[in-house]
Length: 77
Image (cartoon, rainbow, N blue to C red; front, side, top):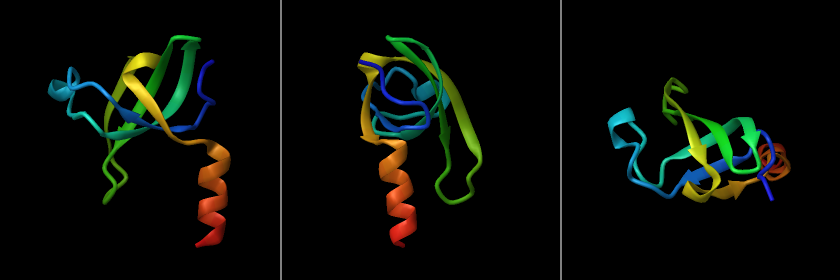
């Protein structure tokens, strides 16, 4: 089952290091290609600047938070 659009995901692979995204990097799903791949935007936590936009198979990311979880966390702060 695909993760929802705008979910926060953690990269499980180290094969994107040349693009600037190390294993365990956090990114946001900005496009769902099919049930097996996503376009994920990785950005710097301090500046918000995007450092990588990658097409990533679903098996190379894990769900860190759904959009609903992110929304409720931001409301609670």
